[in-house]
Length: 521
Image (cartoon, rainbow, N blue to C red; front, side, top):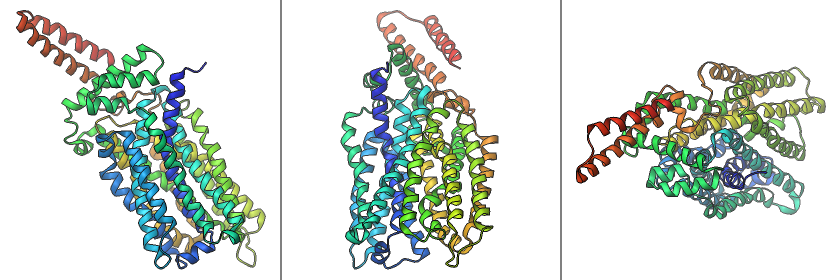
């Protein structure tokens, strides 16, 4: 029988994972509305350059917010408040995007997308941190797999709403695209309504407020045994004690990312992983599949249906991460995923280039079906690997003192890559067609080699032990010594007041602390 604490643990983690729906929905919204003639008419028929600009402008707000504000906000106000504020900004931005003034709609729509980027940056930085900090290490990969799955849930809702609206385009008029945009309100409202029923991260409570009793109460809600609670609580306190005293947390958090060799190494590796997530081709495909399919299928309803089915299968494909990520490890999934995607991109390009086209310039139906199948197969390799596993890896490798800042920056490296590739891809594809897929194939080959040679495995490693894995100091072991020294100092003060204590006692205490630290190493 499943313990009630495990059920509650899953509930709060799935609410936090809902923040990823915001990103998945928004990425799919713009792709969806591009297939609406009413949308094109409302926004004065933007050319390929303007399409790229309207799609990627939201990353400007996301990059700035993710790099400089998401981490400090999550550290100062807490993980829950950061998620809540991000969702609230998304709600405001949705109304701006849905109801831009008809006389000059483009600037208002783009302003709404900038705000969407800001809200998403706050939410998607705090969400995975929260999940990682309240989840036991032995199921952390399993739970975090749902983070990426919820991206697919966002796409699923967006594409099926768009498909339904497209079937009634004549009756809906402009609401055929506004209906798709306004549905983005749904999940932010649900998340905000659930946040009051969720506890704050126990690690944040100790780090920010030194609230050991509060952290113990939170762990009691999400851990099965008293031993598990006290053991994890001690480990958290020891790690944070070291980070506060030895690493001067709170004063130079961003400088630590640069100065500490072990953390700098992790930052650079996760930067490449997050940029690589976009280099696979999935981000571009998710935003411009309608443009790609228009050269294969002339019927808009068919394209909407394909996108909706792709999002549906994306949910099922992501579920593969739930049973593979903690069984086979992060490296295995990343390497297999990259190789599989490279093969899919190669075959897709060859099929498209080596087959004849109809008089109208479109592909025959059998060729179109083959290309769609290959794109679905591409998603099969992407979703559990470079989709889910990159987020899992990013959220778990950093120490508490820089985790919020690092995750915020890493997640927005996706935004940086997204801005570059989404801006030039419409023109690139317009000029080169399916030849552009060779570029993504090559990127996937290099990403597989990068992971093989440079990425350490983190399967089932406790958050507080990541520093040792990456060649840094053990925050837990050194924190244990600092805590024992602090206790010894208090013992000496009390001993002098009572006329007891001495160097002999101190030697015993420090020796015990060092022995404890050695055992943990």
